[in-house]
Image (cartoon, rainbow, N blue to C red; front, side, top):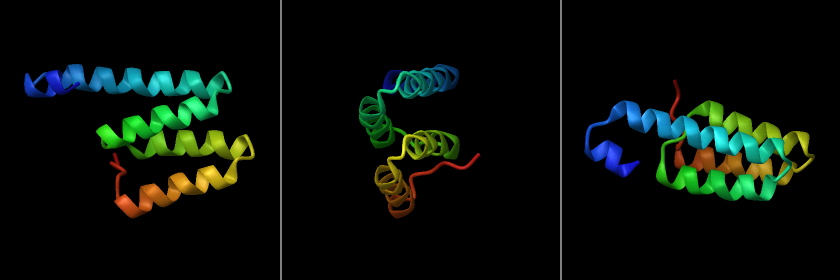
Length: 86
C-alpha cells in the first residue's frame, strides 16, 4: 500500500483498501471474530478507516452478543477520531 501511495497510484491504494475490507468481511462471515478483530486493528493502525468499516465490525460483534468488544471499538473510534467520513 505504501508503495502505491509513494508512486501516486491512487487507484491501486483504493483497490487494496477494498480488498482488505473484503478480507475482513470474509473473516466475519466465517465466524472468526477474534481474527477479524485483530485484522481490523491492524488495518485501523495503518489506515484511516471509513465509517462503513467501523459499522461493519461493530455490527458483527453486536450480532454475536459481544457488546463489550463492540463498545471498545466505539471508544477507540471516538477517542482517536480515526474515522474517515465519506
